[in-house]
Length: 117
Image (cartoon, rainbow, N blue to C red; front, top):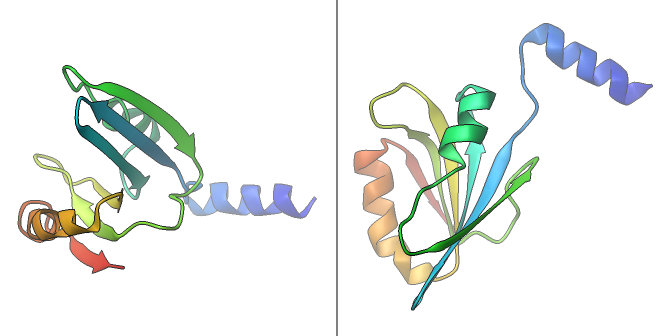
């Protein structure tokens, strides 16, 4: 009963439930895992566009979750999507030294806030 009331209250307030997708990409010597947490992207566009990367020559898997899991070495919070005013949080897992490249991209290209772990 409490959950139903919470869902109704959220619907009436215009808030959406959290939505995220974990993307794993594998190539010959590359294994990448990241999670995109939706902030302002319309849900259908998020699921059918942003969470469906087309990476030539790579095996890609996508898992939808309510929220991104703990354990990321860094998060680009409030990242802006190029060419649109949509926002998301991008959680990075794997090789922490990749932060050397991801932090500047987060701050300059995505106008986000880098949170290192």
